[in-house]
Image 1 (tube, rainbow, N blue to C red):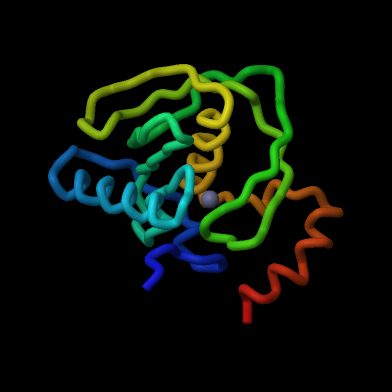
Image 2: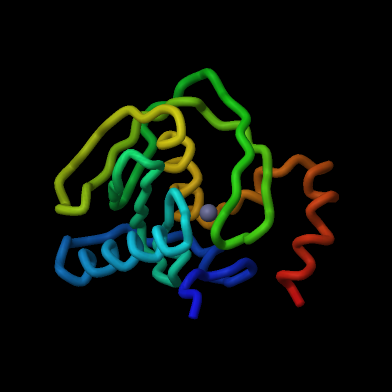
Length: 160
Ligand SMILES: [Zn+2]
């Protein structure tokens, strides 16, 4: 069974709640998310994608996995780059999305310790994509109106 929530699952549109205290249950969720991400060959996963509406993301763009709990973007680079993104919750859909090339993020790591760091390249991209999930935002929301028209027929199959 594929544990990943697929569009238009309502949990994907919900705003995720902040995590309170770190405990073993949260650690288990992180472990499970990391497993699911690797199984699906993804570079990132947000908790709502496994049906858990809490602010947890895991990312591994090939540089080792990291977790962010209650992540916040505190600064963005003024330079934006356009990259084609996919999403495990929207199989076979790809959207060109313009986003800041670098971001400074703040949150808690898998141990519950406060972290703040600047990311660029693929990890900046993946983190912004996953933080979108925590706000109920999906790649299709970033599509231009032309792209949306082109995507319409492909999105229809998810609604059947
Ligand atoms: Zn996604």
